[in-house]
Image 1 (cartoon, rainbow, N blue to C red):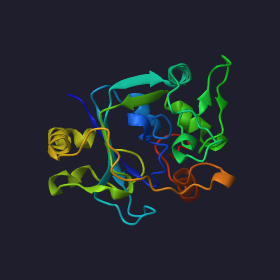
Image 2: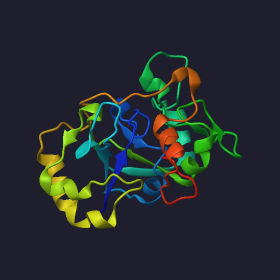
Image 3: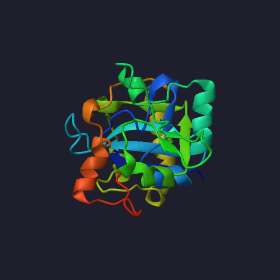
Length: 225
């Protein structure tokens, strides 16, 4: 049976996940989920009590049904060859292009080079340990207009760092039924991300910085996303 991963998004800045261009990708942060999720699994990003737009606890920010899993190296190749809007571009004022999540350049054949992006070298170990990128056109994105979960699905919610998977097993059928029958359009962006990025002084996404300061952990060596 497929799995349902759920986790809290302290700051949804539009980079992880990246819901733009009709495709939802998770290419940075959440290394354990990226390393273990398989096609057919659902990923549910849940709102935080301390989200920039206010208390989003008990609400869903986005949900994606994983359709494809590729390595970070293959993702870089796909993005460059297909001209997907996923390369971070700081020469434009369009925040969607600046938030490109294909931030590691594997073209040299050796160690990947970090492109200018919302992450810095402090995130490198965590990002690369995820190994994979999750890709889907089958997703729902609500951003700061996060939708309230029904009472019988509140069991997938928690305010701790990390994610839930095994404990969500019994909620999987109900979650899929709810998200499919809610009347929302697949691939549509119902709200904007909660932006909290200082473009002139990049030093890691604000969610990562917040967790770094709080000393939280995701079960890895020092994962802040």
